[in-house]
Every structure is written in structure tokens, then in C-alpha cells.
Length: 567
Image 1 (cartoon, rainbow, N blue to C red):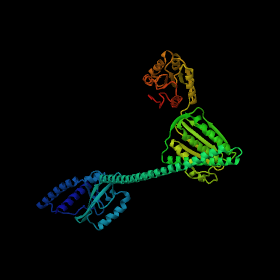
Image 2: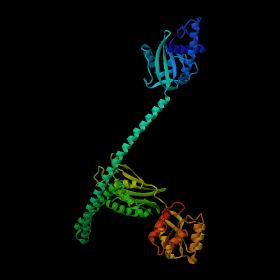
Image 3: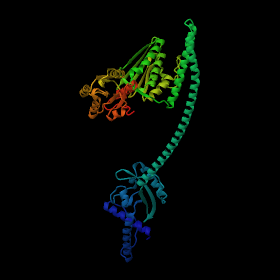
Image 4: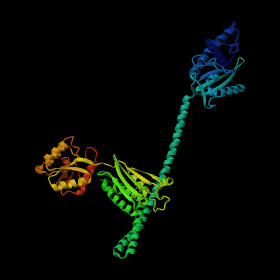
């Protein structure tokens, strides 16, 4: 008997023993091999040899890391080693007697049975890695990716197949990791290529912007020069024409108005170009809302009177804001002018400005012609005009939106054709409010200097309390700590220094900003004593106003933000 037959014989014996232990009946033996007569010496030697072979090959087969199954031509498992039992989550000996289709997922059993029939019709050895995406079914119904090799053989008149089954879960994980790594590499390459294209596009856009900026600068110069001449000589003509020259006066006025309109158009075009190129730098300043709005209200009233429409205004009083005054006025001018332009007489344009906590809300409402719903999409697009008979370039609202965006704000609108339009602008975190109550303490024994401080403080919404001595100052501070202090260092008896030391020496008061005023330029001494800033008499109203505005913008305790120190 050859080694292969001995191996198969031993494995079949092992399988039969497993069936015997489980009590599975058989109509005939799994094999039909008679190695020798049991009563002869040769037969006994053969039996001993078979027993030794069975034991040896069992150890070998159990040591193989892959699962090993022997399946008869009915598809019944007649042998399974321990790795196969572990792979499919069966107990020892429980696979023997089961049909191999049990180890195939239910969705694939029909195709597996057909494949097994074809294999039995033309059996041939099949190695691993020849079939993709094979799945095995464990006893609990879960699946595991496997690879299978098949080796058909015939022994004792029966056809059998040895199936080596390998768990390739780890391999699949590695393959998936490799696939993901390749995908990441591919995406990284695409991102790098996209970044390179974007960089090139950015460079080209910058070049185009540079060229546009140069063109606009040159055009501005070329247009402004003759416009200055036109406007200048228009003024001279108007001055030299007498009252009797009514027709000529009207002609000169028309020339002047047309020149001013063209100059405004050039300015808008340049501003829009700078905004699109991100070349507008905001100059944030602190001011009273009323001061910001005054020229806008006056200009809107004049435009409304000329157009014979009513102009209404409403705004919060004594509100302090920090923003680019010129640019915000430009926003308001454009919105009011737009409302007046598209409101027939005797319509109405209303400007409302209010604050919601620290946000400034601007609304410009008109009872004009409204914006057709089909054209609202282009309202903020440059050079886009509505299908109306009204004149315009389409620059005003486009520039307005750019300026609002630069402030980190937002602009929206609601409009109904034939009813009117409302534009709403929200500028975020620009409102600082009013410091109500006696929050600025003025410690000054010279009446004129004290009144100057009070006048300037009142312009920006600060209320003041005046005391003329150190004793009164100390009492006022203890009774109701002020928001800030303007302190004359040369109080009678040199007591101004005592007030400063008391304020800066107490933790609960040390955060109060103190502006020291003295007749000597001793800024260094004042700073050494703890002063936040120093002014020399005679007081500069501009510098004092700047300091007071900075105090007014502070909403909490502590020193005034942005106060210049040591300069």
C-alpha cells in the first residue's frame, strides 16, 4: 500500500471513528479496503502498520494550519481536522457527517451545488487563488472569507475530494488597507494637482488684477484730469454770469451736475475694483451714531426734496459705534439714493437705524416700484440693471454689498413689485452703547479745564461728575466707583498724586482708567505712579477726545482698550 493510500486510509478511519462516537448510522463502510488477512502474521504486521500510520498522519493533519475536509461524492463530510472545526466554529467531531453545503452561505448554496456537480463530472486538482470572493458560513451564521484548494482522489471504489480551507480574513484586511492606502495616494495626488492648478489660477488672477488695477488707475487719472477742468471752469462761469443770464446759468448747472455724476461714477468704479481685489483697508474709528448719520440724513433730505418724496428717519440716541465711518456712510448714501431714485412722487423713503445688543441694524424702506421676482437674483451683481427706464450703472448696490462684506456684516432685502423694497444691513459687534450715570469723574479745580472735559465727554455720550478737591474725589470714588477718571495732578496741596495712589493701590479700583493732566510734561512720572495716559496743559481737544472715545467703547471693567501709553 502506497503512502497516499495509507494517508487516505488513516483519515477515513478517523472519520469513521467520529461517526461512531456521534452514533451516525451507515449502510456500508466509508471505504472498501482489505489490507490483509487478520489471522496471518503478515496481516497482523499490516494492521500494526496501519494503526501506526493512522496515528502518525492524524498528528500531521491536525498540525496543518489550514482546515482540511474530506468530502465523499454525495457531498458529505467524512473527515475534518481541528483547524477546520475551529474555522467554522464546530466542536470536535461535529463536522463529520454534515453536508459540505452547510458551510456555504445560504445565498450561495444553489450555485455551490451546481459547481460541485460540475467538478465531480470532470474532477481535477484546483489550487488556491483561483476563485475570488469565497465565503464560508460558521455555525452561528456569520461568514468568513476563505480560499479553497480541491484535490480529487479515488480509494476503495469511492470518489472523494480533499478540500484545504484557509481563513484569509487577515489577508483581506491587508488588501483593504492597501486599497485604502492606494486610494489615499490617488486622492493626495489629485489634491496636489488641484492645488497646483489653483495656485496657477491664483497667480494668473493676481496678474489680471494687477493689470486691471493699473488700467483703472490710469483711467482714473485720465478721467479725473479733464473732469477737474470741467468742474473748475463751470464754477468760474457760474460766478461770472449775472442773474439776468438765467439760461446760461441753467446750462452751467447742467454741466456741473453731469461732471459731478461722472466723477461719482469713476469713484464707484475704482472702489468696486479695489473691493474685488481685496485692496480696501478699513479705518475703524469710534464715533457717535448721530455724528455718523448727520450728513447722510442731510443729503437724503435734499435728494428726497428734489424727487418730491417724503424722507423719514429714526435712530437710537447717544449710541457709540466703532467702524469705518466713510465706508459706512457710503453704504447708507447708496441705499438711500437707491430708494429715492426708484420711488415715484409722492412716495416715501424711510431710514431706520437701531441696535440689537452689539449689532447695528440699518433698514432703508421705500414705497417705490419694487423689484420683479425674476430679476432679484442679479440685484447685487455689478453692471446688472433692472429692466426699467431708470438711469443707472448697476454699480451702487454691488459696491454696497462688497463694503458690508468687508465689515463682516450681511445685507438682505425684501421686495414686491409695485409695493416697494426694504434693504436690511447688519453690522456685527460695532455698537458699544452709552455709559449712563455719573461714570466719568473729572477731578479739576480749574473751572475752564473741567468744562472742556465735560463738553467733549458729552459729545460722545459720557455723563460726568465734577469735583474740585482730592477729598471730594476720594469720597465720590468710595461711594460710587466711576468708569474712568480725568485727574489734575496739581490739585491744591499736591493731593492729586494721593488720589492716583489710592485708586491704583486698591485691587477693586485699580482697573479704572485714569488720565492725568498736568502743566508739566512729566509723562514718565505719571506712568510710574500708575496713570494710564498723560496730557499736558493746555489740553489738546483732539487727544482728549480720542482717549474719551476709547473709554466709551469699553463695556466691562479694566483699562480702556487701545489707550496709548508712554507716548
